[in-house]
Image (cartoon, rainbow, N blue to C red):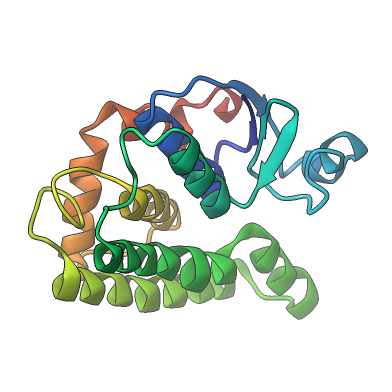
Amino acid sequence: MDLYGFFRSSTSYRLRIAMALKGLDYRLHPVSLPKMEHRTADYLSVNPQGLVPALVVDGQAFTQSLAIIEYLDETHPEPPLLPADPAARARVRAFAQIVGCDIHPLNNVRVLKYLQTRWNLSEQDRNEWYGHWIAAGFADLEAHLGQHGGGGRFAFGDTPGLAEICLVPQVANAQRFSCDLSAYPGCLRVFEACMALDAFERTHPRHQPDAT
């Protein structure tokens, strides 16, 4: 397996966590977003969308982190990243999609860059934009946990899975932008439980070879 990603990309972090939880080895190919390596012809031949991450397995390229993670869960089913019960699976997917569909698209690097270049937003304005959508999204995550969380060690039980794979990188990003997350104790509890596990800690952006 060949993993193309950027150390600070939360979607790349998601995939690193999933592969660590499943014990899957891969060759890492760092793709620097600041250096625009994701727009080179070589990388576009792997992922024509020009985004990270991408995973190449036996010559087949897979893109979009959530789709890749579900592919890995189907092809390497142990340990499972989703519950067996259909209703529980839907709730975990909904939690993950609050991150993947509601928070991340508004706060990802290309959106922030466009806000700055097209609308001349200052760094303070950009950070206010970022913080607003973090607060809105984490309020939704906290409510979802309160309504559907199973009371276990993690978000929906005693083992981490797709919900945690999406939550942890989003918390890491929010911390990087100095967002106050104290109003979301459930999310922070799950984050701290995850970071006590090797699969989440060693895949953190600060430990990646391209972080230097």
